[in-house]
Image 1 (cartoon, rainbow, N blue to C red):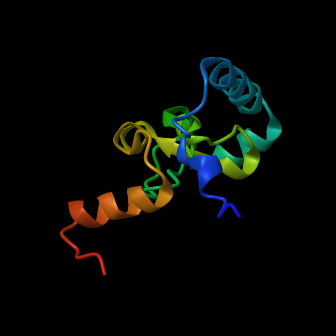
Image 2: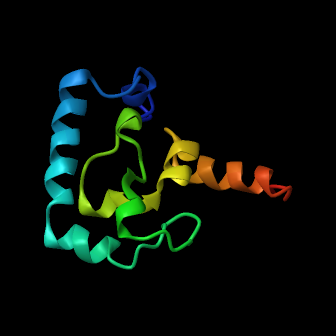
Length: 107
């Protein structure tokens, strides 16, 4: 009987067609009232700094390259600095990275 792990063990990210489709969905979501409201405060989801609406980017909590999708529950506004530093990290990896940057030990 399969443990379920086998079906994911060969996963190495999304193919180019899927990435292209998901990026197009994200571009469409950027034009919506939902995104305007989500980013209107101009606050970065990660560092919580107010950087202004025009200085925010759209970030996928679970990156497209790691199997994430362009859905409202996976998209957050963030500053360019955090987006560049986060790269393709998952939320848990990002928290560990921040802990290391701040010199905190990870239990």
